[in-house]
Image (cartoon, rainbow, N blue to C red; front, side, top):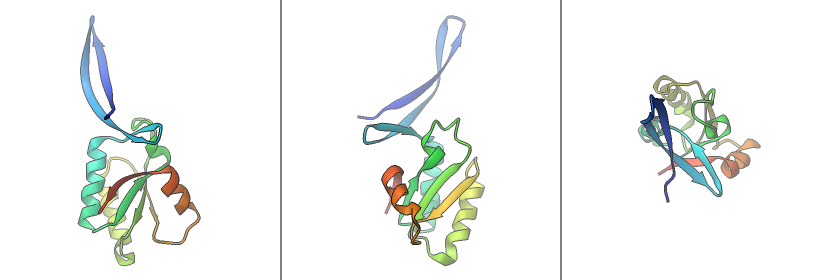
Length: 121
């Protein structure tokens, strides 16, 4: 079952539908990221032949509240990591925090457990 968030505005005595946003479900929780942002991230990931992308942190909150876009990636060649980061930074409407899960870092297991995988090739 897909779940959506509807954005409406009251005009006079009528509700006007402004936007419908699909939500992402993980376990019993529901997260939101706009379809445009998700598609842009996936396009960039495909362009750089990224293995997987997770969103985490404040990016799992309401998109209008999140200050930045927290992403974790796996499979970006080290020599292309900063080019990939720059591509995301230029393409997305908010600042990007990017974590390389290919590195042996303590936060990797937390991101994989609590984050949401939005792309995998």
